Length: 216
Ligand code: E4P
Image (cartoon, protein in one colour):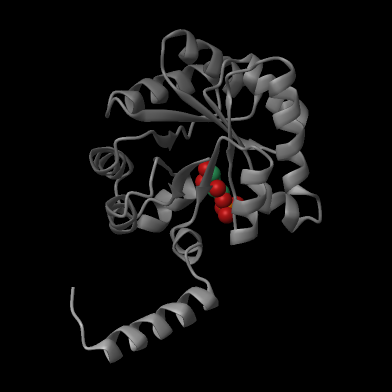
């Protein structure tokens, strides 16, 4: 499973990229607003840090304006992926952009039928929002399982990008369910490495090693 980081904060992206843990980045209008910075400048900066795909979302709701914004975003860098909402106009824009060789991420997916439509529209990625489904007492991971089965049934090449991930269990369960990618907040990525027995074991090894008086 590929790891994307779900943030518009360049410092976090730089740090995680330096660890070699990142395959790509996703942003959304709320994350851009939180950064307090100019959208296109931030996207350009992120694209220069990470080799992999960087999702940047259109703000328009109608087809013509979406296409115009999509072309503006795609011109920022070769690794920009245009993020489109899962609406009829968004799907129409997705079909047009994928025909023009522009990578797309259809976002705000909450049902298997929506995911089927996005794949039929030629989406490169579709983003099911696990955490937001869990928030309303639905089963976010069940949607990933349904999407995996449907995409495999028909050999869709659209990649399942598990989104709205809130904790380490979401990451593990998305991997078990066969998601192609998970987009994960920086703090959750850092937390994946932690285990109390790793800390305890390392502490013991260091103390025993120091007692030998040796150096390497
Ligand atoms: C995905 O691309 C979205 O940016 C993100 O995962 C949304 O997560 P949230 O529900 O925590 O806002």
